[in-house]
Amino acid sequence: MFRYDKVLFQIFLIQLLKIVFVLSKFTYFYFKNQQTFFYFKNTTTDLSELFMEKDLYNVIGVMSGTSLDGIDLAHIEFKIKDNQWSFTILECDTVGYSSDWILKLKNAVDFSDTELKILNQEYTKLLGTIISEFISKHQITNLDAVCSHGHTILHQPQNGFTLQIGNLPEIATLTQQTVVCDFRVQDVQLGGQGAPLVPIGDQILFSEYDYCLNLGGFSNISFEENGNRIAFDISPVNTVLNFYSNQLGRDYDDKGQISKTGKRHKHLLEELNSLDFYQKKHPKSLGFEFVKEIILPIIESYPISTEDKLRTFTEHIAIQTALALNGSKKNLLITGGGAYNDFLIERIQHYLPNSKIIIPSKKILEFKEALIFALLGVLKLRNEINVLSSVTGATKDHSSGIIYKK
Image (cartoon, rainbow, N blue to C red; front, side):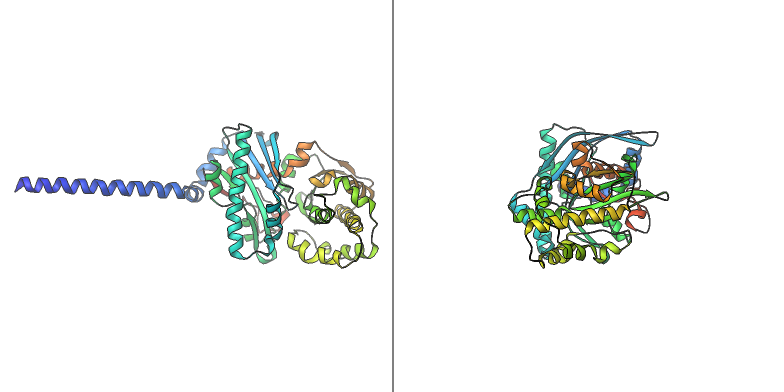
């Protein structure tokens, strides 16, 4: 009898061990697949303590702008000493979009929810591949994080909504890196515009300039006023200029040479300058919806040549820039693709004759936004403020973004 019970016990023990083994495998794979979320929700405090002890950060900043020039990647080394930040831009690349991707991203503003979900998944895979290839190409090791903006498809802060694709959790698995991303959503949830986000980087890294102007898909300005950092979007820039350059078979208006040949249309210029957005006080921001629903229909209502449309809109950008700076006599740092548009810079200088315009080195000019989103990611890792309520109109300053662990 005793022998019989012993055999049963051994059989029971073997079966129990099998069950424990299966459960342990299940638990391992579950947590392996879910580690991103547990990492973000439960260990942010421990993570920030770890990163607060560092004074050197090795990161990659990734940015895709509304002008659809491509994906900017910049390998950055940040140092902090006595609460002063410094940076070195190491390797940097811009990876252009294929014609298929340009078409998808242009049309995505009209996509259904299902189409947007599929696009988000596809774009996350594309972004993951491009980041991985950048790391491999430049043999980058020991990264603290990849800090990625994603690509804005919809931006409707007035409706409590903004969407940047490419920020799905899979991005960490695809790149095998810790990823900090999705910086705008939290600000909109806090009642802010979710934009612009670059000004805190202007304040920390470019404080020697009175004004920082970025000329990208849209223009935005950043400056100090009564002890607060103020910033806002000014007007569309390359979203419109590239649209009409495309009609002439060009990717963009090189140095503004096409615009320069056109003629200003007085009534079109007056109608553009009288738009309600330009009368609003900051904080305020723009999305591609503004271009598609308001700007382009107005321009298209005038039966004038494409060259005249480009010339008139260039003048519009220059006038709105000067109004935003209120005739400043101070120094003005200009970055973004629009800084290569010599004719546009000439027109801005015409309306700001007493301002000193500074065009920085090529690396800063082209990769300043990637640089600053890298900084936003580092600040998030340190659990420090990276979005200013004085800029966005949110209810408070805050540390925004999501952290996904590799």
